[in-house]
Length: 590
Image (cartoon, rainbow, N blue to C red; front, side, top):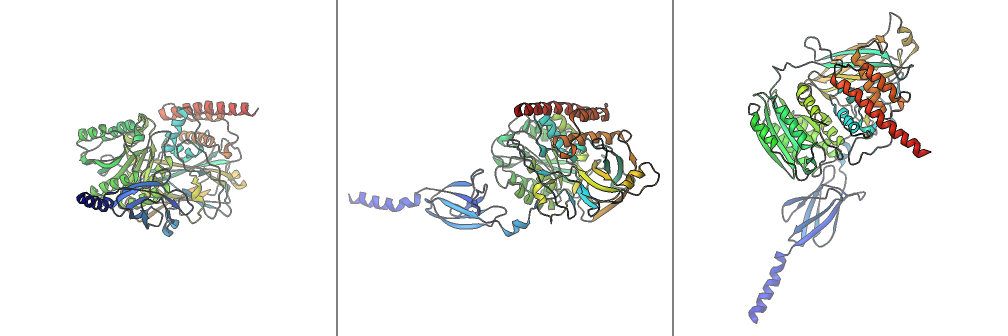
């Protein structure tokens, strides 16, 4: 009996050492809003956990009744707190002082000292798009200078095509007019000699408003010699999470990358980093000569798990740096639906993360896929701040266009931080409006924001269109032989991996021609601009109806070019979608 009593006493003392507790709680900000994906370090176990992806709550198994947690989240002050494991914990994080000034949304176009208007948001299920504010007309007297960032992003057009082919209206914020126009690489003119760029301009009539004119500014980048392009160090960062398990996601990406691999040279090398449940270096740096090895690695990819995008991006850049080629083309190619749900996943956090990574000299290309939960805003953020570009793959034809036919345009940069400043002549231009290059609403709330340029790839033609209201003097010069310049252009850029800013200037003359007399590529670009503005429900296109846009597109399109003919069919499909929608709305209001 004494032995049994002694055993029971010993067991009662030993019990606490083997007890398990379930430490539960939530992480919130100062406004008591839940903070998701906060990093939680449990001191007794020396292990990391995360707050939930929806409500910011957490549950951790521990053997300690009393423990300590350190909680951190990008943009917030880290806190260390003592906790009792059988009590619900509410942990509050304060916004850090540094975060208040860092990671501000970047402007894409700006007119000095000019304030902008706003508009309401538009929802597209679980898809996310930045809320854009359309550029307004600006008076040349008082505001003659305007600037905008140039880039080669073309994602908007193929994403818009995806909506229309599904017989669905297009979210207005998914329409970025400059990307729609530049999807076609129109009016390319080879630069002279050793020049990186060639600039041209054309003044023409405006088909939707007889009182106005259109001014086209064209910037063509030099083409790199395919035999002399630098060796490539490509890191495929492929999302293999559960959300990618659909025909138009991972299978499409596998086919796309296999097309790309077939064009690799022996001097090129490829690595593959995957993320789905966990992050892994799926394929170590492999020469382009070993195509079968690379193709097999791609074919064996399967989709499962969550989406730890933050840690995947960090690993991809680390792999790129470890296999870095001096004077080569070092590039991470991220392919995803953008649905990051583990680690840093907000646009703001991704902005900070990718801005740090681009200092390594590694470029970034984003390939978006999917529908329903497609995160356009996140991929836009990555491409913009990662010194890179962004394309959306809606089918295998688009994959071939981006990764094969436009290989050098997509993956080989000839200039970084490219932006243009236009100084209008108030004697010739009364008002002007930049079509496209619209800013995110949140970027416009901070007037201290700087304009940041974009990357331009080999052989790209970039068109910018201004809607202008001419002065009386400009109207007189249309039929005369003497004319003042309309504007002066300054194009600023840096050579790849160089910090020196270079500049080109160009005088914009009043070379007016009616719309039917100008280069056919520019007339076609006008049709695309009208189509984009119609989809955006632009207040500046009230007089242009669908019949007019469709008819104009048919006369402007080059019937020998497949993509231009496809565009005409797309306008026709969109007309049917929107006219049915308009008819239903009228019937509902009766």
